[in-house]
Length: 267
Image (cartoon, rainbow, N blue to C red):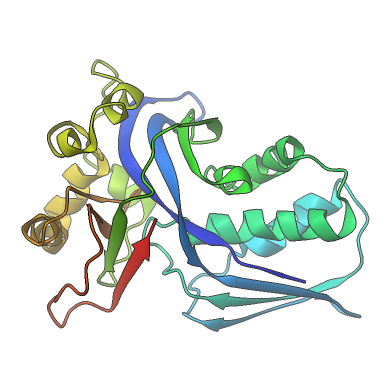
């Protein structure tokens, strides 16, 4: 049993207000990218989890969280998981959330096909705020903590994306430091309905304010992307991956030797 957890970028991110539960209400658009990890599961006598590829820091494991959540609803055999990690961790690309969501889909597809995507989203929302997005993927407008999702009809198929990750890990708490919530402005959904050529002036990720102060090299990458011809450039999520959207295919972009990761994706 195998599937391919995808990544995502955020097209803008507004932090609206602090909630009573300690989280923040946000609005953002998440765009799924054809850029994947590889997740395999086999039936086994003992439960296990192994990885290859990029290192996964920390002790938490969202795939095993997904397995535990799924077993609350269905009885399934003992599974051994192997994840080949390609999407960088801690870069705002949603790789960990995607791994969890795709683990849910893998178990559903092989053992409980009667479970709907809506039911899977409810399970995914128990694991993490971004997890539910990856059940349907595509391009979706997200509100609440990021778990309230509605599809967006914006055609981006003729564009390409360059991702740049220089190995900086930004924690969510760190990104929120210095950010002032603001709900008195044009909604992000209305901004996204404008022509993409106008996004540069009005489509913002609120986390850039605090993250760029601490890591000015990320702001320089954003400038470099525009210098290379990006029609829109931004940081994704709480950072630190930067991305540029280009109108045409490009062959290469040269970065400093600090760059540890660069990826070109055709939408």
